Image (cartoon, rainbow, N blue to C red; front, side, top):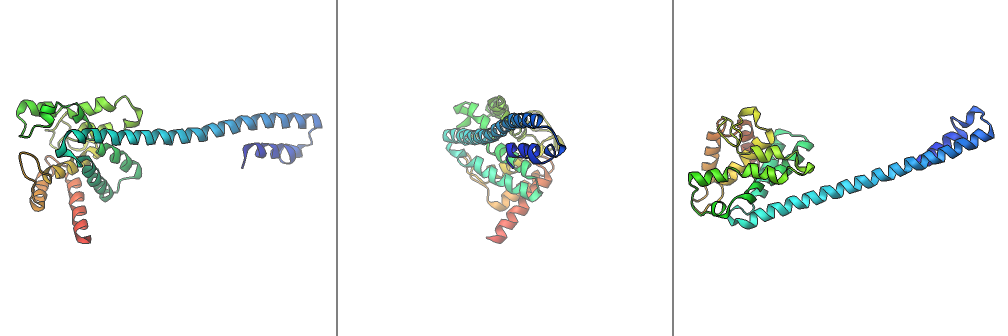
Length: 247
């Protein structure tokens, strides 16, 4: 109900009107009711405008995400489509695990942006057609922290930073950048790890051919518990089996 009509109704014939007030006080209450109704309607309108503005801000952020991913993949033809594939597989794992809608939304954006820090990696390292040497690998290992540097100034991306920062940690604590292990690693990052590992094995690189699916499954299972979260691996393989059986 419109706020002004509600307040005036209470004054005229409802709670206040039934109290037998004099005409003077009745008119005074009408005046105050109109004043406060106007103020409340103004607040209501501002709130609606803020909601619209908030949705527009969210759309702008999502467009920024898409632009960042496109900028990264435009630099490296061998990673084209990688972020989208990791995103798709991460969301499939999330569905298998029964994550909430809020958790899925965070994972959706975080998995798309997991490698965004590679924008800060030198071309001679990022685009090298051979396997990286130790020095180059150390440079490449800085990309999660570069990703945080790119996004940390925006409040919108704060929820996604744990995925970006920790998607190269390992269950045994031998990953990077912080050497977290087990449940210390955020669940979204553990999910993204599995999808990232699968896409790496299933994609061609200049220095090696992709693995066939059975070999990739074997290696994924071998990595469960040491590198990868075994529950996330199981959820991923269950999804793969369901996808195969329905095709």
